Amino acid sequence: MHRFFVTADRITDGIVRITGEDARHIGLVLRMKPGDEIRVSDGTDDYYCLLREIGPDQVLAQVGYREHGETELPCRITLYQGLPKGDKMEWILQKSVELGAARIVPVRMSRSVVKLDAAKGAAKQKRWQAIAESAAKQSKRIIVPEVAEPMSFSEAMRDAAGCRRRLFPYENAEGMEESRRLIREIQPGDSIAVLIGPEGGFSPEEADEAEAAGFAPMSLGRRILRTETAPLAILSVLAFSLEP
Image 1 (cartoon, rainbow, N blue to C red):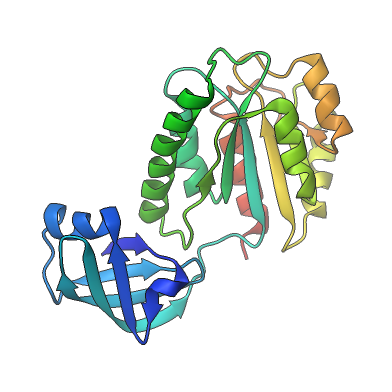
Image 2 (image 1 turned 120 degrees about the vertical axis):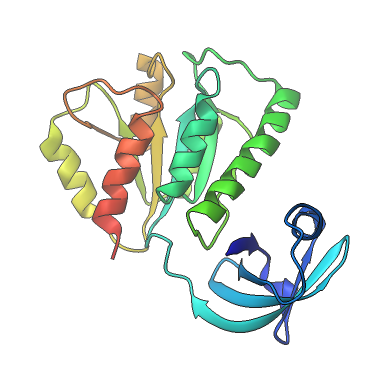
């Protein structure tokens, strides 16, 4: 069943109104017809609907029944990802959304190979957001995780200040018992920031700045993980630990 996302104000008196690119996709690409079934999420609940009217710019669907969404983790996780080279960011985005991240923030770090100015960063963000939405649909998320425009390292530290728990996998961190302790301390409802370095890792200055900003260094094991592997490892651990 095809899945679409709307804001809560698009659902009124049992009717869902879908506009924009999704409306065109339903009619022109999927070639759906009145009576076909779709699933709609508003960030809180899932609505199982029958298409009623299909136009070029607007689709109306009748709600059949609603159920409370249960695919989100009990903690909101924001991934601060050091900008990697090539198309690795697209892979990281897709898999991070599948594993439950609620927000992904690309971060310009001193050892990042990729350098994005404001214009290029905005263009990339638009594509990355589309990838996140596609991954959210595939993995039956209730929300579409936000992909922020790239930030500087210092901006990311300020952005993460509102998160209750702040973690950064670091090769110089203490052993796994400390990592287990940090994970055990997390409670349902906590907001979590996870900081991942680029291919070259964190510079000593960045590691110091992260700790000063409240990020707890932690180990993911004795092996050195690539920048595209580390976020999947920590998100998998968090999901396993937090999933009710």
